Amino acid sequence: MENIVLTSIANQFGSPVYVYDAEKMEHQYKRLTQAFQNVPQLRINYAVKALSNVNILSYMHSLGAGLDTVSIQEVELGLYAGVPAHMIIFTPNGVSLEEIEEAAALGVQINIDNLSLLEQFGSKHPDVPVCIRINPHVMAGGNANISVGHIDSKFGISIHQLPHIVRIVENTDMRINGIHMHTGSDILDIDVFLHAAEILFTTAKSFYDLEFLDFGSGFKVPYHPNDIETNIEELGQKLGERFQSFCKDYGKELTLAFEPGKFLVSEAGYFLTQVNVVKQTTSTVFAQVNSGFNHLIRPMLYGSQHHIENISNPDGRERFYSVVGYICETDTFANNRRINEISEGDLLCFHNAGAYCFSMSSNYNSRFRPAEIFWHQGEAKLIRKAEQFDDLLHNQVVLDLAAVKV
Ligand SMILES: *Cc1c(COP(=O)(O)O)cnc(C)c1O
Image (cartoon, rainbow, N blue to C red):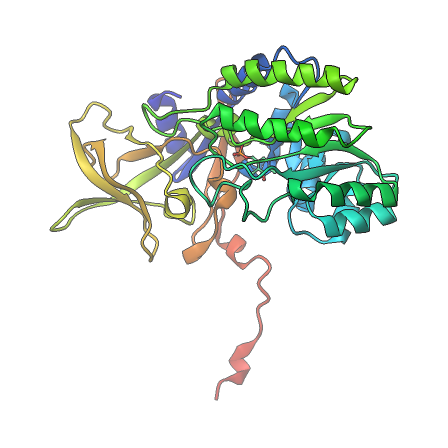
């Protein structure tokens, strides 16, 4: 998006503010479907947890996407947004049997990732088709916090337990209609991903009534200039071909499913903040913005590098800054970063603010969560109001404690 548009949005709606570019989301969606055009039945289920505003969910659905959900609340948001139940998959981890039953009653596709619930659910509801999430024990990406397929991961049923899965399925006579894996974020090596896919294919052969294979997500997107990204086109070519040959072996045309979050929305998001203070210390220059990890926690949580631009002074000479927030904790967004010269009042734009930014925000320090703006067909549309004081008190039960005073 152009600086002039972002600046006018900040002027109109105030800052901090999140802005999402619809066109970029559409571009990413089309890029992915294009990459897998050699697969006749492709399904993209957008991972709701990346950015869960209901307008984003409706928009994704309008592009043709279903939804990937990890809580019953996300299922309900998806249904509220108008996505039909049969286009929603429920892929939770560590939830109760009751929550899975609730989702099944709403008609969404169930995905189970542990033997205990598989046995319980299969015994009670043998007629409800279930997908199984396996753990192929393949390590994707370098960050253990966002890699979920390795040996110590809590996600999925180990492929070494396949005989036990098969026994449960036979004993309960339940129906398995899908096999799923999600090896985590930041796939860089396509061969590693293809290796995990082979494990999924091998596993799939133990089930006779499948309708789809779900390869999860974890596509890496560039976070700063010159950053690397998953080569989706190459992956589409190679995996698509291999998938087709698997279907031939299997004797049935299956659906190939993905559930990307980051890939679809990360680069579509911009987070605009204003510089409150420029503070020189003996060792650095701090630019302190009107935000903190209450609004954008990824740099502190994962060490993520969000590219930051001074859109008020795009041609100014570059200097080194530490960009920090106003929270009473260490909340460093960027250390020693080269940014066009910053003055107090300037607008700093954080890139890649679409995925896992607003959806991880909080009211810490009793700050309001910011507004969200959808930039669609040349118009800035408010899709979430900035919070106000009432929102901080919402659900607080105010006791009359004055009477206790002596
Ligand atoms: C978070 C998650 C995704 C999305 O991952 P991205 O890295 O955002 O693409 C997909 N599937 C499951 C099961 C997830 O938990």
